[in-house]
Length: 476
Image (cartoon, rainbow, N blue to C red):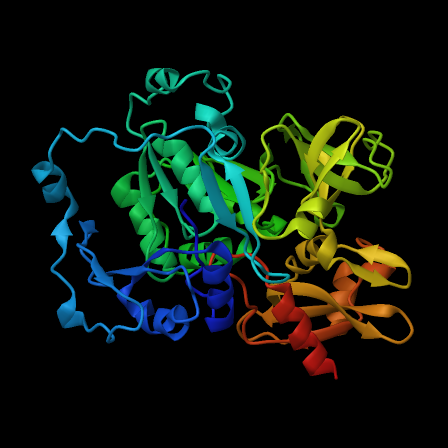
């Protein structure tokens, strides 16, 4: 069973995941050996650590070194020379019979990002993951899911098609879409190293990228800045630019449309617990204070009220996003969390990932944000993402997270943790004026904390734990 591991995890998080997953074999880059050694003795199931060389040859296959826990630290001299990928393929035997008996019930273990707590392992049947997470052989939602493995071969793309995944493969957003296009016969480019926006734009030209995905503002803003400062770049091959996994500020969305006027801009939503749930084509002129509306919703996705009944379209009732059909079996080693998240209502099994939404009169769904990070101020609920989307439209705001801090009068006080644009020092009064008239008064930040950099995961997801502790420490 493959398991994803966030390379940014500190010792405590890494120890938790290795023990919780029952990891037997760990594959890591040489640069992470010391971190692995610091916890290896505490992981009872761990038998081997396969270390690959950090030497960059594009692309390469590196022969592994197997190290038992507790062995002497590796040095670069102990690592083998890299073997070029194309040479390894040419030298390999074409006769490689399948030796493992695989089936639909084989498992797939995906750990969540853990931005509101320790990462949770989500256990999927591979058949359910194939249809629920990676498109079922129909990534563009044009022909419907396949009914047999043979049908996958019939749908192989017969023209040059290149997908560029910018997010790390440890996150579902990159894993799923990469697998989706690989199964269609497309070429998939994986981004490695630091996030160099100039290099990314140049890669689009060099590899003639067809589709590129970003994860929210954390990726989109550096790309826009690089274009404005060092562009333009040649990107005529790109006919789709997709966003998913984190919100995209309307101002950045509109700028990307100017940069790539011939590319279709799309947005998608889902979670580790639900798979892909919906998508939309990004349109100009949207109100950033009204949530994010998705008109193309996957079968099985609905919004349930507090009684477990579907929310009436156009009622304005805020409910919980629910998904049925191809969904996970459970959380790994977490029966209480499983019982809370995976429920049976009137004979239908649903997963409730924690996202809140309304249903519009036309049946589209407007996402408001994750309920677990909502702010309760004076008895009213505030969803950070809708406030953040509006604040990001202020010229002095480079990035922002909105959290609640303890307040004797209001219970929680809405607080903006802002990374200013270069040379700017936004004030609370300026941000208030920017929001006033576009947001209800109770949603407007009452406190402001300025930071050098807003902390996000490598894939661009918000780290609300960091933002909340930073705000609390700053405001006393």
